[in-house]
Image 1 (cartoon, helix red, strand yellow):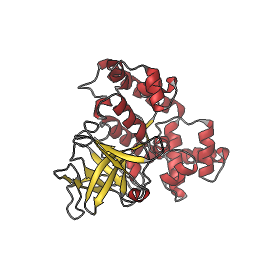
Image 2 (cartoon, helix red, strand yellow; image 1 turned 180 degrees about the horizontal axis):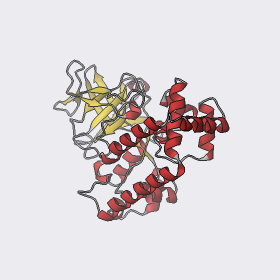
Image 3 (cartoon, helix red, strand yellow; image 1 turned 120 degrees about the vertical axis):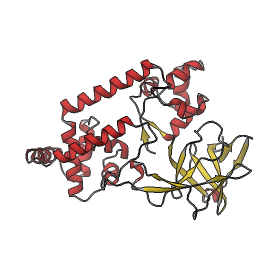
Length: 324
């Protein structure tokens, strides 16, 4: 599952509700130190964990994001300082040169971001930030990347130095700097992502209208609008998007949300999914698991539980990303 990192207000909402840090850690199945890093925005959360946090704290996902209008100024300033710190690290550690070199070599070998990230045992977002020159790389990660590129660490470093000496990385570094400024200044979830390899927008059709039961009606012949595909989904084939036009999941998601849907991904506990009642009508469900290991779906307003058999899973399309 894709990992995300963002400035957040988790600590504020946890304290408002009087929830101890240890209790939140227990709910997520992580350590106390991990929760501390998550609350500071230094450790990544995956989509399932993010949804769990919103449910535990009884707030919407949007309530967890930091913005200059509605967030505490000390939180906003702390995040800005962290961004400045990381930027200085990038400059002094030569990460921009490393990232540009990796991208040049990957393209020269005809490899995709997805292929290298998977072979290096990384998520797509982590490896992409490395190529963008916005993330430090450990010795182990460096070895994994070299292996994914079918070379050794020593030869990889030598090749990047040769490219730098020939002046072949300057254009890539300039492009990465421009792109990073766009991403860093945009509010998370509303970024018009560009394809990492083609630099062109990939547009995804958005469908969906609500009926009297709060189900989502999806007419593939009548798109509501088009939306730019997030960068990390560029390699996913045949995805589509759905306008959040129902409140049957309560206030968990903003009514401006757009859900990116993949019919081929396996649905599991903790996911949000579309459960197709017929060809053009689906329920939006929060997927849970009971004590016997049986999956079921929940939605509210009014409360409703949908028991799911193995055959029902074939009717389910997984929500793989959400923009707010």
